Image 1 (cartoon, rainbow over the protein chains, first blue to last red):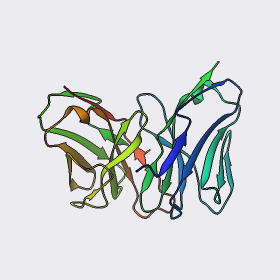
Image 2: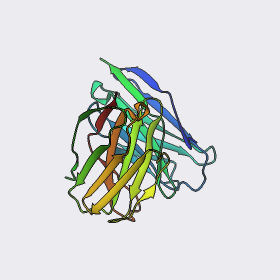
Image 3: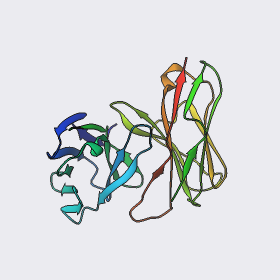
Image 4: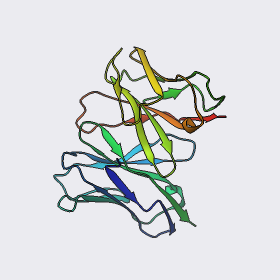
Length: 109
Length: 114
């Protein structure tokens, strides 16, 4: 049973554009929502994370928007660059992390 | 920097073989995890361990077992490999009880079962 649903499965964005990846969850016990970034041939690495007591967290060009009432959160990548091309996973934790299905992001130069 | 090392990058095995995937971490982390990664399914937890000689089933433990005899080493065992176990296997580790838990992943082992 997939407790975190991620969309889209793949995304192509032009350089300089905004990339948006969405996740939805059902379990209200989740208390921590990280995003992981994975480059080809590498394991995922923590990119940015948020706790449900705030609605937004920004780190450089990466922003998490969190909507507790809708049980949704999203990753926004501003001024997307070819180096951002990677697979992105959202996740949520109650007592263990549950990952979304992943989004393969391609930034065209 | 934390390093999580998986013993093999690519592995090809025959159906019915016993397969060992090894993982070692160098940061004295209490928690260790095994995930499998399949396109469209994301990362699914197979087994995890919070301490030496302790193990807990994850979401998809069938067909797998694990061993943690030392704190730094966590092994995944496929008792009798089957073709549906062809996948990318990722090991991860983290500190126990961290409020904002950060998983450190290895680079993965791409296992093909023929």
